[in-house]
Length: 302
Image 1 (cartoon, rainbow, N blue to C red):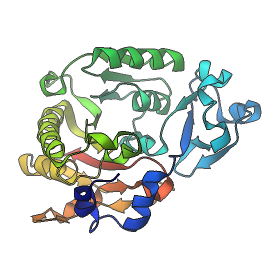
Image 2: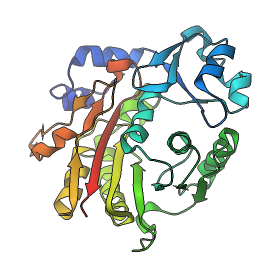
Image 3: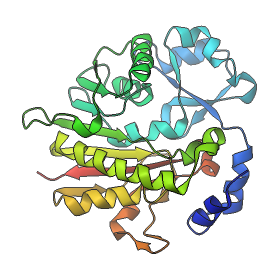
Image 4: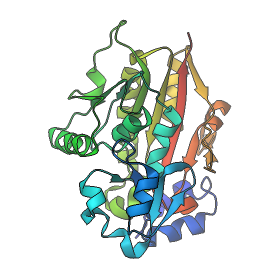
């Protein structure tokens, strides 16, 4: 059952709210990413027996037919590392960050490796990605996925984001902070854990994490901040905090070809956010039957 407080919070800010609520009773679409480090999309399509259709915003990704979805992880393609099970919405933050060959990239909360391995293939396995996480058990999954997918440009570290060492000579071209959150975009699985108190506590943690992440970005570099939640306190509120504390932080408008998303909000209850926050992106579960996501891209001025 969806809590009354949840409905009261979001009725005014989420479009097509009744449809949004209906999607909590629907099974989320299953999607895969073709791992072009080990195969080509053309070779995969010529060999696979899965019934699939394209993800509009990522040429190497596909939605899997419901009848085949349960069998993806037992296919030969999966065991060989030719495909990776990944929510199509979670592919958006790496697409927004857009890492290139030869760049230094930091994924601050990398496990289990969905976005790390996606960025590795976007970089053609060149350059360097530091894949960091604080949880030992999750790092084991991260290592397994990196090995299965053949990502050779990834180095794993284990640090609390809030104490990740910053050095003037060791800053990064691109930094991804996919922050721990209240999981509202994944509530078809985790709804039982939701509370407004949890949202407030996580927002405090996220502000500390983004404060620690910003010094790691080099001049002219970019930070992508993302969550799989809708809470403005964890999204627009965290990004506004960064902008207020750092004069060199400039918000960039989110543009991903093939993806129709919603703008970030500027008002919630008694709080007014900077109009610049409209440049951020929101994806709701009823848009594409994916998970929900928030994405912001911030550039550090030279």
